Image 1: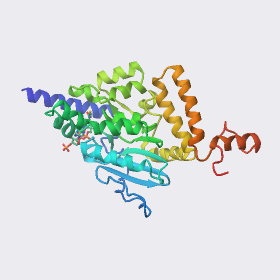
Image 2 (image 1 turned 90 degrees about the vertical axis):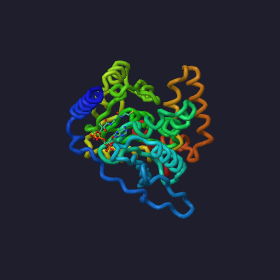
Image 3 (image 1 turned 90 degrees about the horizontal axis):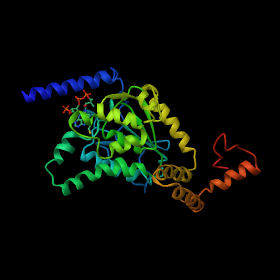
Image 4 (image 1 turned 135 degrees about the vertical axis):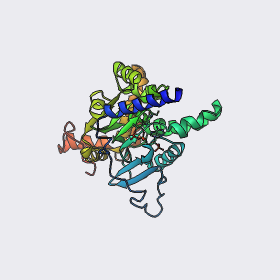
Length: 323
Ligand code: COA
């Protein structure tokens, strides 16, 4: 009797999620083209090869690293193996000279179905508190710490289902573009959990109080358009235009001075938790730091091009980095 009740509730939940998400995902229309195995450009002699290749695929093209969560048969749920591979991939791509921007997406019709309920939750239930801390550390490492303060700009390209822990990487990436047809949900409430592992922190950092409470408490799904309207992602576009839009955005970032871009995005994230005095001091310190760190001395070049040579207008575009 208990089992039947549970099954009925699960089926009702699944049905509700599917109908709320519309029919596009059910029909498999949100599938991204299958990414290549890690067989993109081979590293030149002396360069390190990229790890991954099983649960995480990497393709590098024109300065963009396309990193794909690759467990489509499990809707790209995060397993311990995937976390370990992601950490290795992120660490390898950070200093890789071929990479200027990192894009994170999912294989098939899903971006990420959250933590793997079997391989992560059920597997860690019998562990001691200490063992669980070690077990869970890797997933927090890549989803939050590494991505949040990555040395290169990051874009989450949300192509389909995005549940629970899937929110972490969307928020940790600097920018996020979703397909209109993508389907987001804080489904934890539907299975006796709360959005932990900083999922809730990521949610309240991007969505307003009312929306955060609403979706945390109802577990209702919302689509890409709604995610954009709430400010959870920057923008939503039809799935057929998703890769092109993300590529164009990445190209804008690739044109910027990478040192300035890094300082700007890190500052943007760090000053939120500072008071005004600390923030002012930190930002001035960042400016001083950049005078030493920027190999192309962009600020001097830009001032020369605007004030002396009158060849560009900072209000309307980037200075010429090769002039
Ligand atoms: N953990 C473990 N396995 C998962 C999973 C997760 N988070 N999400 C999907 N899967 C597995 C399913 O168990 C199933 O495995 P099986 O083929 O061995 O039975 C497979 O992925 C396909 O899932 P299915 O539910 O049949 O796909 P669907 O396309 O009909 O529905 C979802 C997709 C995402 C709506 C549905 O899988 C789902 O609700 N997943 C859980 C989402 C969630 O609550 N995540 C929060 C975790 S914090």
